[in-house]
Amino acid sequence: MNAAFQTLSIISAMVVLVRTICVSARLNRKNWKGNPLRFTGISFSYAMICGGALGIPLCWNPAPHLLLLGIAMRIVSERRGGTRCGR
Image (cartoon, rainbow, N blue to C red):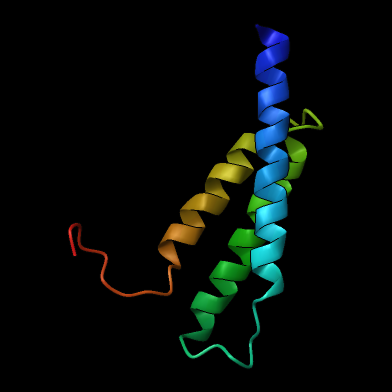
């Protein structure tokens, strides 16, 4: 059971890492129409998500916390407006 869970977590971390790299490669400051602080927040969030996803297969202890902080920062610096549920 432990080996299966570890394999699943490694595969999931690699999927997150590849997807985050693909999305962050399209970020461009010149094409950004929003607040510069939000761009900075999104850039840092992608860096934290990549760091956390890379740290999980390497068994780095702070990796899950870094991944969670990156996801939280991504939610806070969301570019789209309207944070109300159901809208």
